[in-house]
Length: 120
Length: 107
Image 1: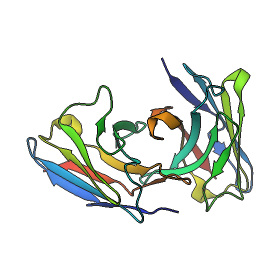
Image 2: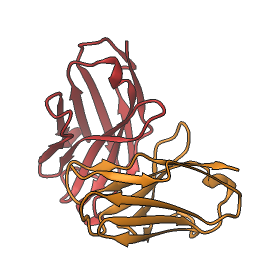
Image 3: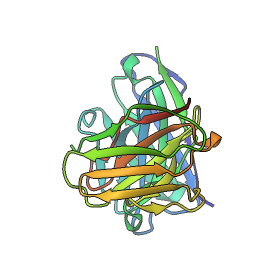
């Protein structure tokens, strides 16, 4: 059974750095083809993809946010960490992590429940 | 970045109606197109992957079609539990991108 869960602070101040952890089970990020992405959703708005780390440690970022984002994995702990620097109130959103597989065509087949992060 | 444009942004329909949502990509994405359903306060759930494949557990009244730049999601007979927001997403290349969403409400 695949599960993912986001953890981190619910409230951060402007200019601070946000660190979020995605802890997952039911798959391994050392398995070929596995990938974990971060996606966010401001209140009442659309989904926005942020970053992805692959089984081979390739990393990909949103074009508009890449200077502020860093993603990493800890395969032994089954965790993926996202950091976002210089937080602003417009970054207030629910942040999700989700799994995808290259063999599955890249769809996000399992999602965490999300964590609401407020910047104020 | 590949831009994904959904239409309409909002639709109001009756239970039992046939509903179609369109998603257009700014360049060809072959069939690297996926559809998600999101209910208020919940994480999105995968409905259709690779343009036309029904995700395990998704009701058969949902179907997807298209390739290249033009895609559709169809609900053959709208049910009360289908009132939600639907998003398309491309995985042809990174950065992954989503459409702006289509909110389906009860008429």
